[in-house]
Image (cartoon, rainbow, N blue to C red):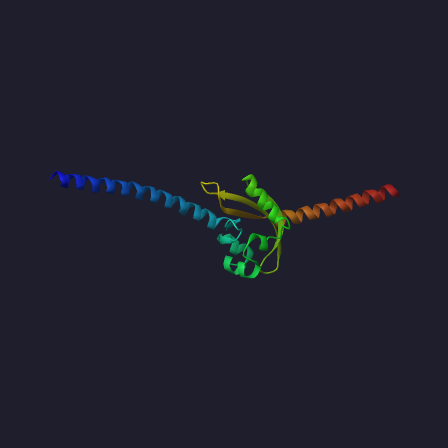
Length: 171
């Protein structure tokens, strides 16, 4: 009978450990679900790249903004950030991001599927594993087209005003 109690105690301990593990897994799954809801319903595009710079995931805003699913985008424009970025310094930006282990931002113009040109502020953030090995690169793009148009209009008006003042001084 003692053996039966030992076996029962062992099974009970295993069951309790499994219950604790199950509870932790449920909590983790709820957190993942929350993050998924945020990422997929955000206005900004979110893209995840592997350590080689290959685009491996994009949120729904990416498809709405660019007019492509990620797979269509990769077939037409390229598979890596180096192929698809319109930033001529993207390699250096990415190296800086990884070496400094911090986010880096830049602005660039991108072409949509309908050939419309739009301006974006892109934020690159490295994600590292526990052993400090690069796991992913997260890219968040914010559409800043309206701001860039306003900046260009303001620069044009300033140029006109400066030209008028220069002309007025000569009269």
